[in-house]
Length: 527
Ligand code: GLA
Image (tube, rainbow, N blue to C red; front, side, top):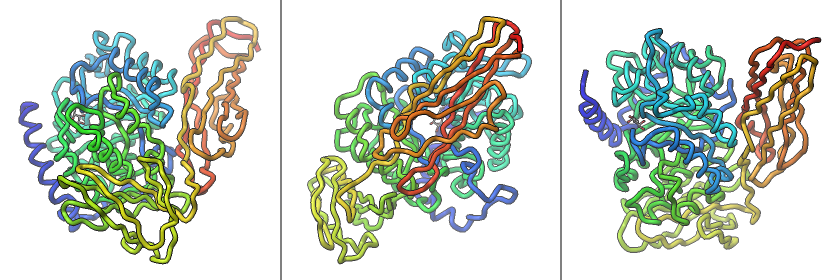
């Protein structure tokens, strides 16, 4: 067995190779493995039809100090900072010593670090209206060697993750020597389905095995490159190399299947405000998952403003799910386009990597638009709209900074749905032997511009003791969960409710919304 350092070093070499040559090297091998479904897996579970947003500890903290207190404090900070209201939802531990495998082969929580148990932490996260993310590895052990990997225990482990109520599972590729990558991740996908709890499946092979070719049939997102930084050490040059490597894979992304250039470094020590703004804009332009990686308990105003800029988030969360790409690059200045948005507008980015100041004239024809188009230009950072401009617009950009724009024939620029729930967990308890009717509510608010059609819940998907009605309309809708205890035996009951909706401007399906209903029946109940 190689040491973790050895493994990390060889992965770093692989990463450099991948970053330089990813797309070019992969082209001759772009054959899709046989036996995988043709359609995106997200079509089945409706998850991640826009890129997942949330927070993961690795970039800032590494393995230490990952524990329940940290995750709870971060969940609290997600709410208090306004990030939850901007759409960030997935949160939980990355690699740290979260669980071990008992003699019976089953995973058990490390209670020293997670005294409420991984399920208890999941409940805490869900009660805050956030989604629970967990981490494991497809090999024999996780990267540090400190936790068991899922190899040969795929079904048991995915069942444990479902019992812990994970909504998102990042699955690393360390210590996987000799394993077939496609078969391994496909087996894990199968194990997740067998466990009965739909999860965002985040594959983490750092580009190994060319996951962009096949992983959309299995999961929802895949890392395209090596780690963006070592824990606590933001590295701007490396982040840019990753952005440009990820850019080459634009054609593979779309709703429910995302290229993942890694968690963000926005707000980590060592980056300037311009670099933070640029990184965030690049990730939004590439429709990347927006997993923050900084310490949310200690953020400057500027970091919060960047991470919660809804006009930028709107580009990332656009329902069409196009990944923008470089259409022009002179080595210092790059022009990014190819990102049509749901209302007929376009996102455009100019990144300047030089030392002084770039003046870039953007011609509509460079963007694939008509020279004769008269377009309003919205600056997504200064929040100013100018125009209409005919044929071109000029922008000035400082060092390591961007101009992030939205071009439209209309001056009105809607924000796509950004959903915020008051809770994702309804807990009900019946203590009496006579039949009771209990209700618990979940309210979901759209922070985007449009009123939404009513959410739909398939009554056939619910257990006989539960009914769900949707009350209210437009921006805020409430799921009223009504439980009838008549005839129920003493015990614990659980339902995972799925709701679906359609984004009204594009007519595209929105990501399915899931929440848990727990019912405890303390005594047998008469009919
Ligand atoms: C890999 C992943 C990282 C992190 C570490 C944990 O390096 O790419 O994001 O999860 O493992 O060891």
